[in-house]
Length: 428
Image (cartoon, rainbow, N blue to C red; front, top):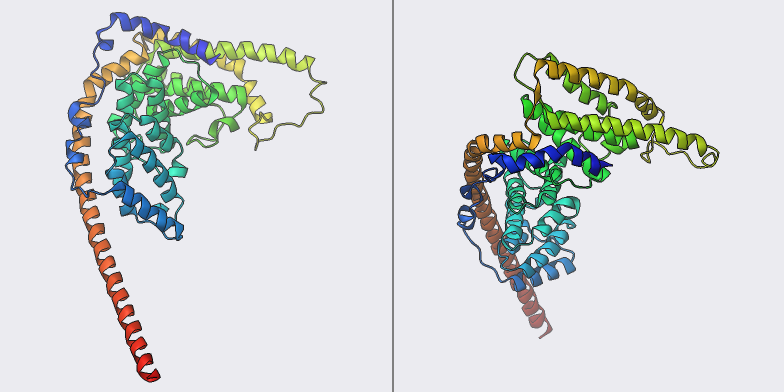
């Protein structure tokens, strides 16, 4: 059902693509200066033989001793092939499950993602990102941007949205550039008319809602409306416990009601904010399909009531629909009526934007992405300098510790030799 709704909602966007110049210009991507690797590759290098380094880590782990964050950093920094990316993935996993797991450096995470992009194995970066608890991969905003952008350039919007979902879960929509890229990726993915799973609806809905709350213009309000509609559909079908589990979302029921509240806010606002035509169409179709499903399920429920009498009732912990969810479902006719009234008000007030959501985001990217990049690059330059200073400090500390360890070893050997000589003299 989700696929058919998205198809009806965004078919207009696909048609606009053929006529509107916005869709023939690929400026809605990061610039060459943003993705340039010169600054990163220009950092002080510490060449290593990865075979020796891997052997050292294996021996250290076999002795139940921790590997330093500097060691795993050296391994990742010296990757030179796809095969070595696979090896690095293994050692990142080992490091995450070691006593030093909390000390994986930010520059190591950044280097890991860059290496995956460089050697054409972004799926490795995405895999470790989606399994961050097992690998310890928690990128910063700049690193997220590089990965999202690499997928967008190849028009792999599904994978780009998978990265956006991780940004949402990490609550890292702080940079304006990340917000724009994420909106662009979601708009591009929905325009491909995908068959959305419940998990995708929930993730994309949450991302749109959070992104929309950061803006008060037409794009922001439309994103809030679409986000609430996607999440509201999941809530109506599966209950609110299927919505907020593992998500940075409110535990309060009524996401469909909050979608209508967005319409009321725009209708009452004296500003320029509008709602895009296709997002309103989307909400309309969701309400129609939910009404149809509700009518069908009520008949099936009555016919099969006796068969289910002995079955175990779903609990809140299992994510089933409870009594409060049924109360929310009962509000559906009211929501349908309110939607029709509010849409009429918006159309009368001229607050329905004819351009598609995708077109609006494309225009925003063309207008604002370059300015956002400037601030990001300045921050990145400072971050790289800080990483270089921290790495030099760690190298000095490592050298001092090795010298101290060697000195202590020599002192122990000397003491042992002196004791042996004393024993020999006493015996003679």
